[in-house]
Image 1 (cartoon, rainbow, N blue to C red):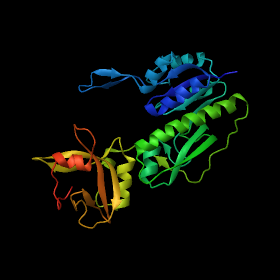
Image 2 (cartoon, rainbow, N blue to C red):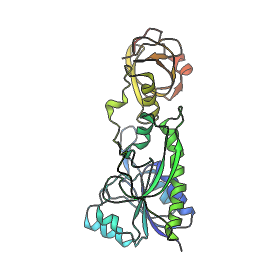
Image 3 (cartoon, one colour):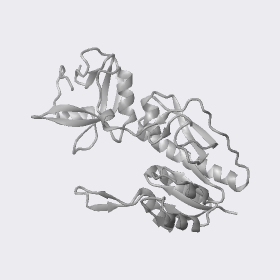
Image 4 (cartoon, rainbow, N blue to C red):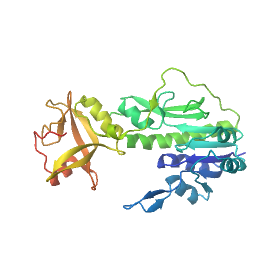
Length: 311
């Protein structure tokens, strides 16, 4: 038989899992996602989530409550009579009544090797910390933050030149494949659960605005990790004097290289910048209001001479 599944997710990271579950022949009876958000230049347009758009294209009923704490919403959820709920980057807290509603529980696809990087920003934190590998896990959800027992795991190597955007795409598909495998095992009564270790717990707290500004006094390796870990969103940034004013410029890609100087000093015409120790070359940049460009293209319209000190 197929499973009756409630899918819960919001960003594009969640989309491959939704598609994969539907393609595997399961009956996705409802899709829960965050409500449409204001967008556009004036913020007047309400834009549905990527998951909502996908669910509608698959003729899956969409629900977008602002909270699941109310009794009325909980009764609607229970009325779907689902075998299981699958959660991938949904973004809302699931009260115990929601966790208990599906007959076989709620399962989360989480992009880290739990218990390392529980929480909101596991992809970014793994790169920023210099982890050599990460992965995805399917766990049965409980009341704690990403504390439930693990059903399946798949590891992924983090390459030195990998941005969070690149890792995002890899793990989005890995999560989809692993969740389909887990649901097949659940359907067959062959899914085993292993409690998480109490050792090695790390929390992937949400990225703060202060962290996105590049601190050139840090070692080159850490500056590089910050740039790669925050690319493409929210984007590590610095200020540059371009024309007659200081503008914010996102640095979307970098490379560790040799060089010494006062932190923040531009060392050559290739935008090599001195750090606390060592240097990084700026490989891909994006000025506010412009598209992302490689260094050589960026410098065609913007002059930054050697010896300039970036604040």
